[in-house]
Length: 273
Image (cartoon, rainbow, N blue to C red; front, side, top):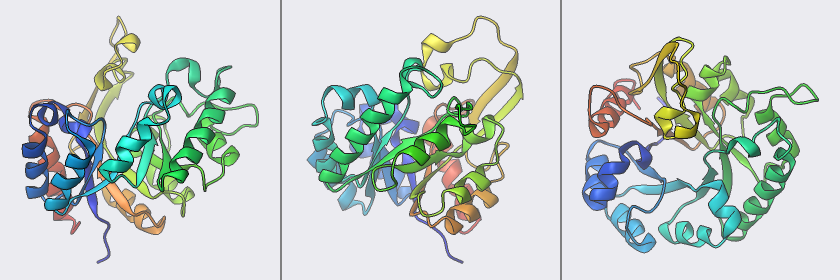
């Protein structure tokens, strides 16, 4: 059976990585992950990150680099190039930069600039979605699709987050197939949801979006332990020509983050991945 290599977003175990990067990466390798996606440098020199991962046969696939940081200083990309990243992802947009706002046109211009800077360094820019991109633009497209239809594929590729696609009411597998040939990395993220929860962005560390009244339940879960149809997403990733699937779990309930990513890896192994 054909499969894709499996990486993990180190943000999933960020506290462990901040305390002991090398030890955390060794545990990730022992779980059977084949690559990592960074979200920062974890008090470690980029060259050391590359060395540690290389010794463990782990590919430094990509990195989430804050959009505003890249705008302020494009040379921040140099550190991730030195770490060995093939891809750089825009991980999140503040409210004033999102589709449907006056600032979105300028946001797209900046994404083009960053994408070109990535290309100059031998890397490729990705965009990592949440659910707020699923707002209709004037031409009827979702903001996410508008982004991809207005920025060429050689400047911007997709990093489709399957959790947020599902939260937005769309079919993750269908969305991955939609971007066949433009979906090098697919984020595998599982979750549980009841009602109309207001705490979803609080769970990814966005305190400004915390609601005063909670009207539902939402929690991130290990891959294969939530509401997602993971086999269909994996099959779609193969059909789309993806290069990697990356496990991401923003927060963990009832277990440590390290236990959670191990459960995700064991589930994928049970499917032959």
